[in-house]
Amino acid sequence: MPHRGSVAGKQHLDLRTRRRLQAQQEIHSAAVALATEQGMEKVTVEDIAERAGVSVRTFFRYFPTKDRALVYDQLGVHAAIAELLTRADPDELHLRDIEAIMVRLIAQIDNDQADDLARSYRVIVASPQIMAASQVERAELLACVPPSARTRVRLLLDILGTVWLSALCEWVETDAAPDGQALLTIYRQRRNQLFTLVCGAGNTDEREDCECFGSVKS
Image (cartoon, rainbow, N blue to C red; front, side, top):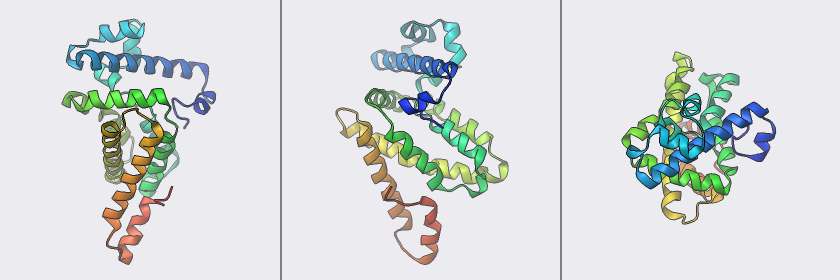
């Protein structure tokens, strides 16, 4: 699935889809800007719609709540994983499969997205309510997985999410000017660290189990 913000990705999308993604991004950016300026608890849907230059009705066409507008998955991670699940057997899914999606999407982050991502992270971690909203798409994704594979996929997403949040936190705290390539480097470092922590003992059984992580050299 093409990355929502990449030039290459947009070339593969029809006009209606491009307009929808642009509208979602503009509403999301307005929500992030207002939350940064005022605090999310003081921001209303009407405020966000006005800042984005759309009607309240248009806002609700794309987002059910202001919290969902703020946690909008601009990288398209959940959509890409959902697409993967339509062509892969969830019972055979490995961490390397969805981890490859993360590497590809992070590698395509441009400067504007990097700045927006950093500001979004700061707002989200400051509010338990918004943190909860960030789990809704994940829950919707799991609901589409057959019950027999749900525990496996949930665990894979939890592992991936832990590495992603660790990398994102370090990136925001250490990088004065948000940069997508710096985030990719940190993400790979944290992923490799997880590989070492889990597979460090090195016996045969553990090495076989850790094949699900894939190559740590990518």
